[in-house]
Length: 268
Length: 173
Image (cartoon, rainbow over all chains, first blue to last red; front, side, top):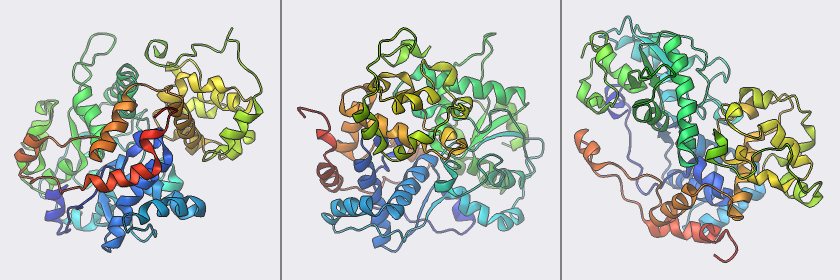
């Protein structure tokens, strides 16, 4: 994310004092605590006159959902602000909360002009993930049934974002905490769907989803005993490579599933 | 599969359930989205798109009806904690019911009663102790030439979580 932002001359500030957003984990345990913790992050950004940008569906969903509830429910906003008052903070709803792919989508014409290493022949099973799209009343980014925006970005590189049956399906990541077995079985179905569609890789825009496709998938096999791994790339790794950035600056040396099957087409 | 992984209520069939606890239904209707319980006409579109429908003992549309019937046993079904929070049911509900949000409310109720997978207890502690759910991996940050994560004053997040009573959600805490 940082390498691509730098190339596009987007200035990112590290978010000093930010905590975890609490994500669906804290929302599951206690909603008032989640609203307060997540609301604190938003209020902190607002106090500094900043917006928030994240490359994670979990943070995006959690912060957007918090802002949505606090903007629409006066009683909850009052309670949460009473809690935040102890820190000299107040949620006002001024800060914009954006996923990094939203920023990239707005810059698509500029990105188009910077593609120097086309990735022709790459067949991408793009996994939008849940909280980037749903509920659409909160996320407000793309069509929840036929999303196309990140696909458009990926196709600027000359790669193809292929249709696949379980594209909109959850990756199973949030279930790791409750049952790894069920989380893996959800992932297994996704991998079989991507393979059936003839994908040469999976692309994600969320670190939690990415961990499913790049780490939890290791050792996962179909009924016939065949491994289900496919090279897994983060959206900024695909864009960065096509923009001619150094593979190491994009963290490609850290990908767990071997990229060997697509090294030629990636030019690495 | 889910039978082995989570959820004490294994099947609706043959289960003796406490019925029609109006107080429970009233309590549920107070949670976010809960005011629309009666709008559900059991079309089961929610279960049709649910990634765990074929992996749970009690499906989403059944859970919704259990709420209306005031069946508190719903908190012991696997559907509550095996909901992935993907929001597909809520997105597609033809009656506009905020189903996923209702399930979040049920998780809150279940947690207060101690009905939850153990991982959530550890996560609550991590969030309280460090303000984070996950710790950054230093060698990976080094490899990417990233400096340390910007500082967080844990006293601040604790102050917030003390006010909301995160560590005192259950009787006796």
